[in-house]
Length: 173
Length: 257
Image (cartoon, rainbow over all chains, first blue to last red):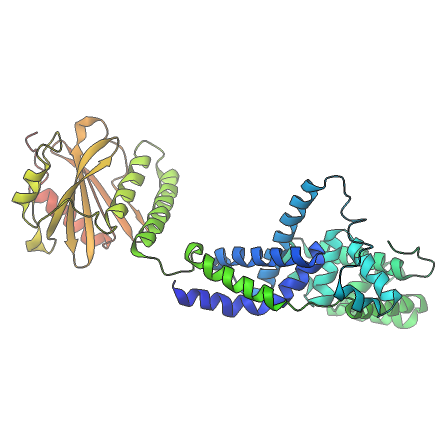
């Protein structure tokens, strides 16, 4: 242990900051909350650096995911009456990024909204698969679920997204 | 393979997550089944669409800076740091007490478990700067009288420098609910604490004869009406030979109260 240990942590774990932030963005659905979650996750990761085995990326993403869950629980306690999977953020105009994305077309906007409205366990599976490119086994590791559960969550999540994109789908939001 | 079977695993198949034999069977089915082929196309299109529609974010520079700063602030508390001597000792004490505590639960739940913890903690505490000795002297004739008037008993004190265990000093400590004598010996860079108190006081009993893990060893014996605990990070063989010296050298002989 020594100052080199922090350097080693930074060398191994800091390169995954973009991945961590991406996951946090999709899990907490707010830019600033995502930053708080990522910072908390890194502090937690530092405290538990000794438990790191193998790939730092999946290990860090698991911590980010747990921090996001903790954040959501606190949030739900604050706003107990808000059904957080449905209305939260669904129709917002959340700044520059959203406006840029709006230009990409209605279908994509619908897809994005549909993903935001998925229950967290489906959303995280899809984000980890499509954005982070994790294998089922890695997703299972990050979410603490069996591989079979990962598979069925992906299938159900994709089914819901397809429904959202399909013809005759009601306007999202 | 039926359409239902194929559709159940279609996503995993497209993700390359099914065994080769299953993949071959699905591929063969999809080739001959227009409906399943259409579903497969749709799934592929969705995956591409999701990746196109959903950005992978780049962490803002401000977040990068925040995280770095938080890590540097937290590092001294997080376990990934170079401890000052006393921080290291406190951590070591906690670790040792935990380990020994666990070991004792597994082997001996009787009285003495807490005492063993206390003895170890006292040893580690004594290694903090300025805590080792209240009277620093290699002369047993200085150390022994120093305890007079400070304790209600007179601990046996001998110098074992001839055998390579020089007496370094003594101090008062508090163990098992009473004030006890702590004698400090050296062995190269190692320190040995010998805690002594009257066995008849009721707090002397209990505790294993040997204990230790993770670099600390404890030896516990009773002689001449006194309870002795020797603790050190010295290797076990040398600690045992030191204990024999004390026992054979007459230091365990009854001392006048």
